[in-house]
Image (tube, rainbow, N blue to C red; front, side, top):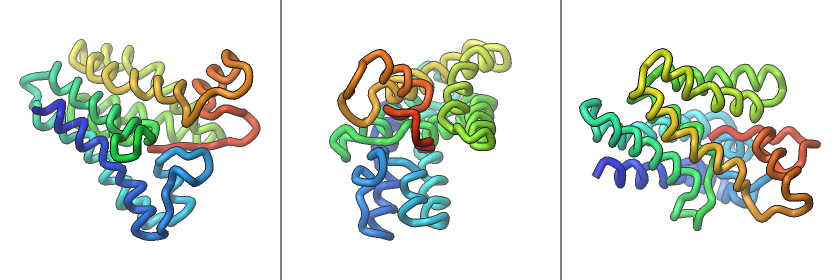
Length: 203
């Protein structure tokens, strides 16, 4: 039940709903096509972003909270399910965001230092002008850091959310055009198919 609830909650495309309600825009048609808080900010501004952002984080905590701390394995899977639902939402025919917001929510409910790690990566990356790189760095250190500070429970929770986030970066928003290996590396590191433009994606 908790895993299914996590997936369902994660699947609700709140940023896209906010964009449609406030500006009549489908975020899949904006920029890179990522359904994200960044896209919402570009079309609707800070107010809708703030509201949707809080809800995007909160939805990641639904499954883990239902699982309770007495079932850490189920809670971890429920958190991962929320990220999967967000990244490949059935309501958007498989489109979605990058899973950062629901991952933060899932970790707040299980291993809060992990949520701080993801937020820290975003902040440092933003200051450096490459949010995607900062986010990747946070993804890389997340599991070993949680293992150290929260033990096996934290490491499992971190693994459950970071795997679908990394897979979504590699999958991108469409088929690969051009040289496959180069595109995959660029997607993984810069979260886009081409390095020329800094496409900061948070959601």
